[in-house]
Structure formats: C-alpha cells, structure tokens
Length: 450
Image (spheres, rainbow, N blue to C red):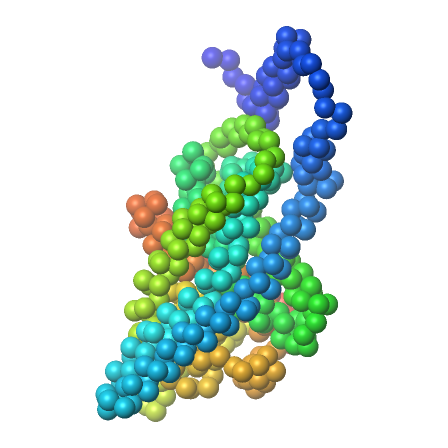
C-alpha cells in the first residue's frame, strides 16, 4: 500500500472534499429540477452559522442567551421548591421536638440528610428543567451539528474528535449527562479523552457558586440589568477559559497517555427543521433531567449525614471540619484559598450545589448547612473571614477546574468499567485546578497585588 504520510495530516480531508465535489458534479449533470427556489434560506443560515467570521460569535451569543434564560428563569421555581421542601423540614423538626426524640436523630436525618437532599433538588431541578429542553431544541433544529462542524478543526488539531464539542455542550447541563453522551464518539481513544476533559465545562451545579462570587466581588451586589449582563459576561469568560483548558489537556493526553491518529469526521449537515416539541420535552425531562437528578439524590443522601456528623463531632472544642481545615490551611493559602474553602470542596464531592452552604456553615460554626439572607450579608461574612478579590477569583477557578462530582465519577466508572480511568478523571482536573490556582496566587503574592 502506498504511504500517504507525505500528504500531511489533512490528506483525509482533501480526499473526502474531492469525493464530495465529484459527487456534486455528477449530481448536477444527471439530476434535473423543475423549479429552483429563488430564496434558499437554509443555505443563507448555513453560510452564517458555519462562517469563519460569524460562526464563533454566533455560538458565543447563543451560549450566553441560553445561560441567561436558564439562570434568570430558574430563580423563581428554585425559590418555590426551596420554600416547599424547607417547609417540610420545619414540620419534621417540630414533630421531633413534640415527640421528645433525642436531638441527634433529627439532626442527623433532618438537618443532615434531608436538608442536603432538599438543597440538591431545589438548586439542580429548575436549571436542568430549563437548560436541557433548550439544548434539545437546538439539537432538534439542527444547529448542534453546525457547532461540531465549527469546532472540529480545533479538536482535530488537539488529536481528538469534533463530536467532543457536543459532549461538552451536554456537560453544561450536567457533566454526568455529558459523560453518557460520549457514546456518540466511535473511537475508544477519543471517547476517553472526551470523558477525562468533560469536567472543564461547568455544570448547572457549579453555576450558583460562580454567579454568587462574581456578583459579590466582580460586579456589584446592586440588582439591575447591567449587573446581570456583566455577571453573564464573566461566566462566559470563565467558560471560554474552561474550553481552552479542555483543548490543552486533550492535546497533552493525545500526545502521552492516549496517543493515536484522530479518526475521520465526515459530517453531512442535516437540514434545518421545525422542532418536535413532544420529543424535545420527553428527551430532555425524562431521559436527562430525571436521570441525572436521581443519581445526584442517591449520592447526596448519605453525604448529608456524613457532613452533619463532621460538623457536630468536636475534638478539643472545635468541630472535625475545623480540625481538618486547620491542617489544610497552609496548602490552601498557597493556592489563594483557605482551609475551610478547601474543606467545603472536599465535602461537596457528592454535589457541587452544597459547596457554598457547607462553607457558610463552617464560617459560622452552626453545625448544619445554611444560606445567608442577602448578598450583602454574604459579602460581610466572607470579607470578615479574610476574603479578597484573589480569594474570589481562585474560588471561581477552582470551582471551574476541580474534580468531578461523585455522580459524574460513578457514571465514568459505569461507562469505562475501569477504576484506572475513573481515578484519572478525578486526578487530572484536580492537578490542573491546583496548578492554575497556585500560579495565579503566587504571581499576585509576588507582585503584592493582594
């Protein structure tokens, strides 16, 4: 067989392009059409959506719009669900008090397990119920294949597959769902790269913390459309940074642990079509939202009990959480955080939604997870505990880049059937998060900027 390596890495694209051109030429010669539409709106849309000039700005614009709709639309239903679920919690505690049940029992099962479950459901359900239908709507319209087409060049340069872009899009809703969607990638090598890097796009569970910190320290806590747009801009900037890290880590993996030649990605763009709303709702709610929420709830229940125990078991007059946080503090300071923030991330492994409530509980030593009444109260609490703009920045970077939640890790284990790759899916993002935060913190310390 003749060696084609002298043609360069793009020789397969050249061959496929020539094949399609010849097929088009043959079709033009032998196929006759009675009437030719004067206005080909789908071709005009494709010229814009896949254009080198407008393709990327359009993707960013639509991404920002989806996030804005998701974040703005989730606030009210989240508050309603939280009021309902925490109302039940109050009733359970009243019943325990009236029945003279020993205090540790409602503490463990109500303030620990039930409160964690309530938090996970109230924070996760509304954004997922908005994001996944929007995502499925774009999928049904035929836009997502255009996204894969636009990003294929970048991923191919990194030794991976253009379909990885679609798994990343799914990861915005939930990284566990993003891992499951990696099944669309045929090559086992490229599928593994997509799984190991999917966590670098933030899921819905991390958005509340990112928005909270950005609002308090980067934008300003006064409500208003300008501040909302500024917050969305910061979040989109973080997402772009996460995509850059995804490409960089994918490149390193394709050159080291997962060497290989990128498989051919020949994509025939489907026509634009009206979405089938019934299929959109069933696919997004039943197959994605309920599936992901169910797994998160199964993990969060025992985790809530462990967190309550660690907050209420005291050693030398301080909680077990505070003891471990003191031990972690020197390392945490080196990466621009503090021991309690790092401890909140460790205990937040079951679900990223509970990281901030654990942090507040630890700062206030309340013994159970809680939230502050307003952004101003939250800012006062954080600043009084030594937070600066560097702490806020590195908190956001660590949240963006750190290890996947336990639901995602379990999904990776089920998909790969390998403890080795599951461990690497935990280790690689952790090392990246620590390295990035360390570089940022040490640079700021060196120049005395904070």
